[in-house]
Image (tube, rainbow, N blue to C red; front, side):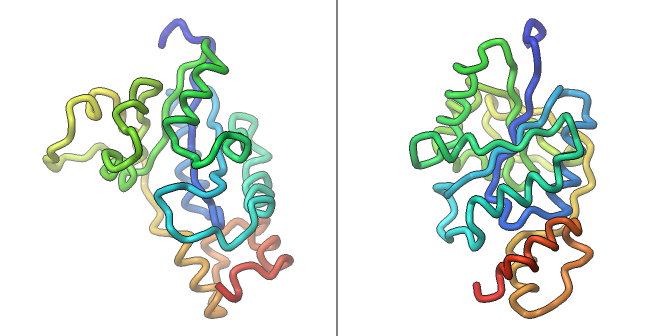
Amino acid sequence: MNSSEKTIGIFGGTFDPVHNGHLAIARSFIESGLIDELWVLLSPDPPHKKENGFASYALRLKMLQQIFESNPNIKVSDLELHLPKPSYTVKTLEYLTKSHPRYAFYLCLGKDSFYSFTSWHRWNDILDYCRLLVADRPVSEKRNLPEKLVRHSQFIDHDALAISSSEIRKKIRNKESVNDLLPQSVLHIIEEENLYRNT
């Protein structure tokens, strides 16, 4: 990887909606010093999630662009919208490594995603295209993890925020305040578009 022109972190998700937890973890990836840029890839319909997004792709993209536009090292991408469906991570990384042969890639994950990683479609092949950058304090508990997964993973320091998009949707549906869970720019879009009221 030392000969690469640039090291890119890939951070994907449905972001329905994007929230302060996503913002905090993105900052931890950038501040790790291990990547030059973070590319935030909005998933149209990830295969491992059974429920459909409650906000349109265009509105989820708009919310992402709002909160990350001020950081020049973070780029929001709609790449997966234009790739063949379903949007498997392995196919996305295969495309990225072929399109940018001089770049090195990290797949950026939270700890929960890391521990469920072996359930991902062709997880073994994903590691042929990238390393994993896992945002959490290094774990001390013993886990029976595949050697290849351990060898291709690097933990970075991060204090996770206990926020989920499903919790936010539920609170909005129940007419509870979410002011402390979302950036104001995202909250404004949700209110303006009347999102998540009836889901």
